[in-house]
Length: 120
Image (cartoon, rainbow, N blue to C red; front, side):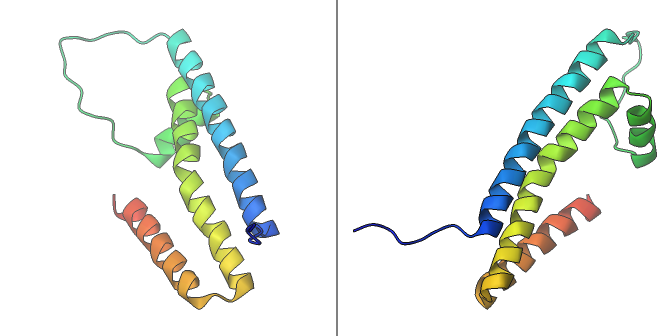
């Protein structure tokens, strides 16, 4: 008794895209780490600096000047995008199959992802 369940082309494309996103995230993050360790960062032990607060303009500035911190942040953003991309591909697959229950579930999951990203 074999399974007759076959993956659709959209599902296979989603898995392939998420795999390549994972590889890109690893490479970009490692490149950022290498850049960061080669840059000069004077240590100021007299002053305490609070945790990093993300700023999109500062991120773009770091990235445009190929600073290690900006490149590492891009790698982490690529890593964070993997589950979102997977849900989008699953949503497209369920839309093609007209499976309303899973369409609603995917929309709820996407809503939770996007809400948590926009409100944090």
